[in-house]
Amino acid sequence: MSQPVRVAGICFEHFHMGDNLRMVLENDMTELVGICDSQHERMRESIDQFGIPADRVFSDYRQCLQVTQPDLVILCPSASDHFLWVQRIMAFGADAMVEKPMAASLAEADQMIEAAGLAGKRLMINWPLAWSAPHQTARRLIQDGVIGQVLEVHYYDGNRGPLYHGADKRVTSAEEVAAMKPSSWFYSKAAGGGSLLDYLGYGTTLGTWFMNGRVPREVTAVVDRPPGLEVDEHCIAIARYATGLSKFETRWGTFTDPWTQQPQPACGFVIVGSEGTIGCYDYQDHVLLQTKSLPQVHAISNDPVPASQRDPIAFYLDCRQRGAPIDGPCGPEISRIGQQIVDAARISAHQGGTIRLPQG
Image (tube, rainbow, N blue to C red):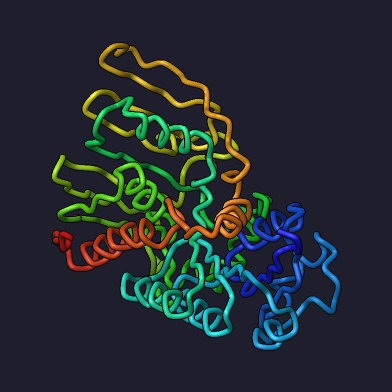
């Protein structure tokens, strides 16, 4: 690419915006041309940390787009506003990278895909765990046929809570959390808050990737909503595939954050195949493997992460340079199936029954 790709960051409701902006600034092939949020204070940390000049800071997204003319817009709104923002960016004519989850509902996810298709632009959903070496290693082992056909995926993940850390995993105090909680979208039902919508998609989307795009036949879910909250902090979803049962569990309130100290249960995946099993846990330097020829569980060092897979910005640039669509867990196809399972889990938990999924 002869000229750097122009990137803008719009809507700072999700704290991952700071992480994404850092990746833009550290990449020689991208230029951060502007940031925007209607509430200036939400941008303050990034402005100070990265030294973003005042002429690149906006409060009106239309002005931001018109002045900066970005090729890619990074979006970090509340889950319920994902379609709204994708629609706006596609109407302008830029590619969009939306921070996870994909959407607040399957219908909105489909509207996002349709908007991108009509505009002829790339839509990418950033799942930060997709860049994790153990999960990429597990995918390679699956593709190499090391454990045969994948039969089951078991996922447990989460953290102490979405307000206990900010960009770059900056730790916040219990007092800060208490002050933020009443106004945070994470704890607003209308805004798409709750652990089910926030975190279950990690498991269902990467799980679909491990399953090579298969869709379960039905989903049954239960949630726990502590007194005084309008959203859940714990969800367990059971998905029945043609090959058996898989489990996707998400938790706000783990004993420790997995990037600091793995809690028990450990956060990550166990993948069961016809010829073996893989344990790939978040932030570990290895995966655990057992096969019919070597049934004793043993550690396998992670594969080196290719430069094009090290973070969402590098991946987007690689796809753009090759003229390729966004694929894998961050592509609309796999992410949509993950959203379909999340949607079924949400409905199941609300109705108290099993939801059957249409089969392609």
